[in-house]
Amino acid sequence: MSVYHLESQDVFESTIKVSTLTVVHFSADWAAQCAQVTEVLKELSKLPEVQASGIKFYVCDAEKLSEISLKFMVDSVPTVIFFQNGCQVERVDGADASQITNKVKKYSIDKDASDAVIPQKTLEEELKRLINKHKVMVNPTIRGFESIEDVAKEKSWNIFP
Image (cartoon, rainbow, N blue to C red; front, side):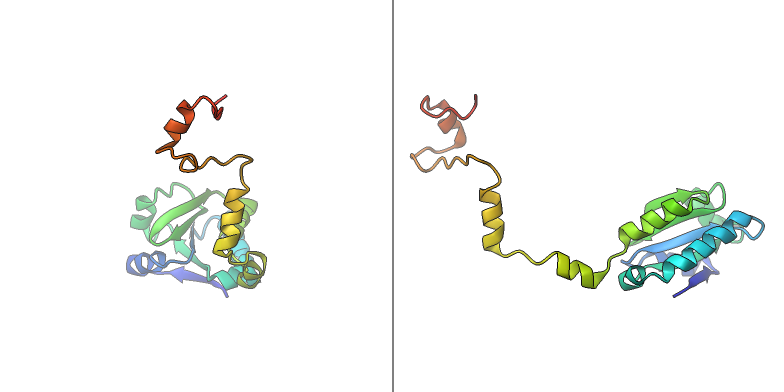
């Protein structure tokens, strides 16, 4: 996987509308930090969990596509904006490689590991979890009460100390 270049506004608009995370790096040729951020994105694109998640990385020339830069308030380069379903979900202003990496990893999923770690709960397991969540569970219909307020009015029940 690699980092792709966005050449037009139409391509940009269609690129950010996908449901998977799209990472767009607004850069300029004259800024040395932009080259560093591009290298970070190239390395991130090689990670197995990032590839499994379908995250795509793009570079957008902030000066060439100035309308897009204005629309997303890109005041300085490098700026990395994270899009999902056409909406901005995260943003990193500046060449903060650790922050960019953390945000990408936050959205990346190792699908094989997630299936193994988080099994689908059955209805019975979920009910047991809910029942055992609190020490006392009051069922107002046991003694013929209409609501929990009626239970609270009953002097033999001290549920609101």
